[in-house]
Length: 176
Image (tube, rainbow, N blue to C red):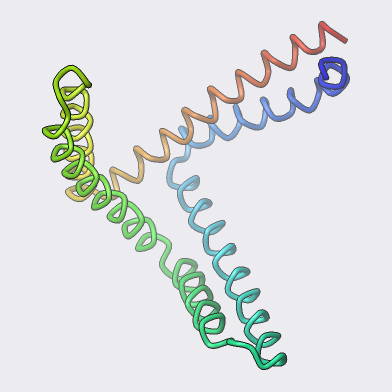
């Protein structure tokens, strides 16, 4: 397996360079990055909606249950079109959803922490729950800043991933 990887070291190098470029773009132009992610989501929702409608038509042709597929397709199309028409609203809704999720999961984690003994890491659960609640509250208070921070996290991930792929590529190249 090592020799196969070593022969294709260049593929890892390309992945690394693309990751680094994406990370730099995410930091330099976070608004453009978030808009791009919204548009990719919109395209996915539209394509998924079309495929669900096609599945509904095919199921109807075979006299099978088709109504839920049709509804799924219509919802997908509507959500995709709305995301294209109102990308900023889509970002705010997405960040708000993450905020509510963080609040809920943090509260549940805090509740669970007091059912766990101190010897089993109770205070780590408490810390995780508090962190989730604070994070969720901050996202709900300032969703656009939250979107910016999410973009930075994606950029940071892409940079670390890209560097890791480049290092791996050059190590593989040395093996070749």
